[in-house]
Image 1 (cartoon, rainbow over the protein chains, first blue to last red):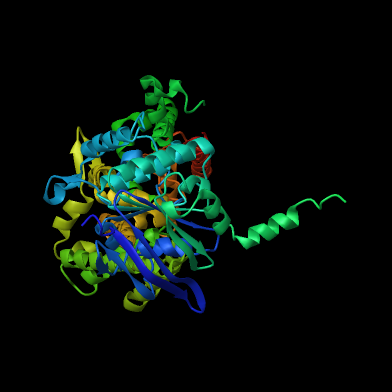
Image 2: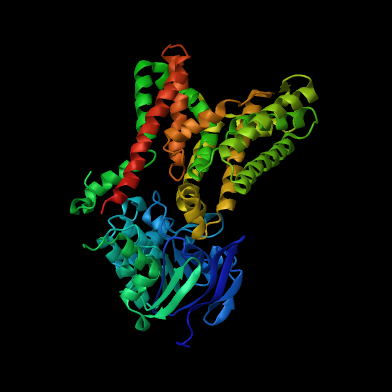
Length: 262
Length: 346
């Protein structure tokens, strides 16, 4: 049982017309582990996320949850199977109160018939509790999410996914728009989610954010996999070199380097 | 405004901040200022008959403004809401007088007509992704043309009258157009409808899942969809609520006047939007309040009648309304900046 990955991607390809967005991608996500998807712009990271999140359907290959092949038809489908996606910019709605954001789409209700209503007291209480658990002390659950820092917003979205029973958490560049300290905060929440037994897919283009927390690396380049490694098989230097194009970087270094003095 | 410091956690500052971000704050202040201004100058304005007089236009504008506010919070406009009031009156009137239907049946049929128009607007906006401004501008013009064309075709004039002789008129008149006498003053029943609907709309917005979805689709539709909010369904429902409100006012107006002009309601669509914006709705959606829209309508009613009571030329009314609108938009901008800017602090 513990050997079956919670989510497995097998030889997935996706085409948009004649454009090959992804070709023959495979990797695994295990409970309590972090799988990092690394790639430069245009490498196919976004398409990869959207396939996992149920936005796109793969043209070839399959997705397996707990070893069973599944088909995701829409985002709700993915959420219902415990696959939660936190998008970089689209995670929360800035003008809405924290508790409204936290329960958006899955609001608790109380009462019956025409009096069935949003259970506001419960929503506020749970929001406060859940955020306290990950170390965000909210002054007032009524404050708009827009008043939180970027790192806190990502963390609210992560806390929400964890609370709603996500088993796989997909994070789309959660640290890329953040400063060093805030990125550190978000990485800490990712580790917390991992320690609670979630499988985490962490998409980034920053190997320095990825390496300390990853258990597995999937390296993408121009829609192709250039490697699917366990952490023991690869070092930070290799990850950095591979994802920045390997030979390309060498030649760039050569090109940019000062000509040696005669 | 120092944000993210220890001071911010002190409770009493929190209270001030919470008050400041209430969307209806601006319209509440505005309503109080306008009330004091006119009440100080005119004894009729502050007397019971004056109050009944300015509550009446406030109620018929307010009922539709409430729905328009919900729709605007959901991120859309409805320019056909004004002409819809006339269309409903004409459908009801023609069926009851020219086709001799029981007026209650005519009211039910005009309700179905209003729902169909709302569905049409909503479906078109959701399916095409076109701005609702354009889609409802189209339906506004179409309805305006139909109102004139069909009325002329059937009656030969631009007026439908004689509703008093229709079957069921007295009971319908009692429900939609009668007056309540309190202490010798006649208050129109539409005021009761308005107050009840303000409470219902506010409850719907703040205490139901539907309300949460409304804020969400107006705030960021893609983000809302990603967490499983049924955006299309919510939006279409909002359009139908708006034409439902226009239906109610259409029936109220028709029964009150017992005749309907073919150009009834045209021009009011912007007044509804003005009331909603004065009440704190952002034009970009995602923020606003039902109570605010009602306060906006109240300001409208008070200014419209107040100008007459203090003996000014009624032409100044539009100037006044425009100034209120600008003030409200400026105040809203400050609120929005407040809500979004502090997020960028470390």
